[in-house]
Length: 432
Image 1 (cartoon, helix red, strand yellow):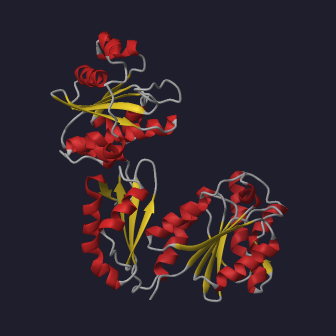
Image 2 (cartoon, rainbow, N blue to C red; image 1 turned 45 degrees about the horizontal axis):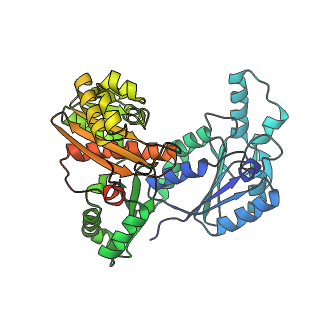
């Protein structure tokens, strides 16, 4: 048996005009994915009764589960209950449970229950109430033409609570036991979508149709997803996942278990297991590497200090970089980042470091050091490694990418990975 077909209907003039950015559908997609369901179709319409009636009618006839989001409020443009009543052929009636909820909601806030608020209790006669402990408008559900329809509030935190506590558990129980949904998610760094797809096309050209392969680009990590819905696919999974991870190689960060972790989180986990401390010496990233590290809860176990030395004078004052190096080699040079790395280790007494100095742009480049040139130095005091890359991107993206690459260099160093990453092969730059 196949998995239930799920569709979403979002309503609101604000969504259509761009006054509000739709984050609710992403939230719903995520919680549905966690129980093995995908969204087959998503539609957004304005606050128009005829449009809503037409869409509800069509979507209910082509899905097993329909979640309608928005349009439950007290104003004249909140039309979900009215539209649904027209579709299922029922009158709107004052629902006793919804009315009681409104009375208690107003009483708790010391406000009077007025006529507009009462509108939120006018619901289709046979609907089932979905409690809303965070807002005035209850949710409700009906079954119509073999489709379970759930009406939910547009306020994100109200929707989230309603989904997690009530709707998703109900939907999960309704999924037949023989429905197979197996999802594996892999985090990859250093290979873009097109590069990885090319490798798969060349090395895994006979990829089985029973295993759906998907990609979600992100910064800095690419997510690769394997989805299986058949017993044949499950039988093939072990072999083909191994083949895929082999071609991804050392660009594989981790298989996602639960909430995805950042590349900094993975690095710090390694540091803690090895009982090591890390420091940073940053110029062109302005402290972004340290920021990425300290975003991780518990980072203080492995990270005590970082250095942001933007000017040459501060590189000398804070990290003891010899002033002559700036005249001989320039601030963006191998000699300077090595000196920055050593200085940061000596000053912080850390075990490992990452140092960066580059031309973030859009100004400041030259023929031999164009915008996007960046030197990295990383490792321990007696083993400093270096690399120069050319990353000719906009300033913010450049800083984000340099930070991620710096963290990845340290990840590879700790794991004693000696293979050359794809971003070095593609972006290595010969610089004095």
